[in-house]
Image (cartoon, rainbow, N blue to C red; front, top):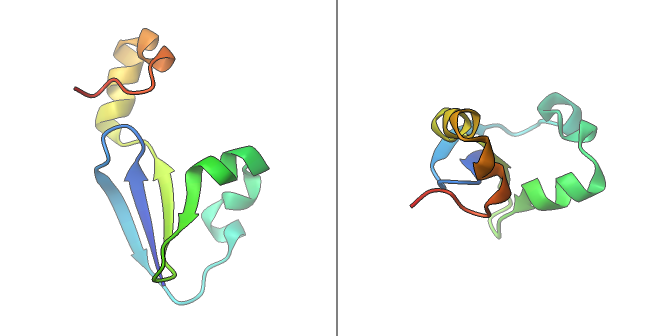
Length: 76
């Protein structure tokens, strides 16, 4: 099983963990609400976990342009 972290704004890969045993507490997923978990965590057919996060570039863009938070997508 692998855990893939992907930016929810630009789609770039942020990181990947190849592991055979990890639990939600180790990943911090247990701190998410059910709604957050449903929107941020998904599972592939191969049994991998995909976690939507934000990359440094998109975070910097949001900090410089707070009005981008209102948009569904700000990457052109």
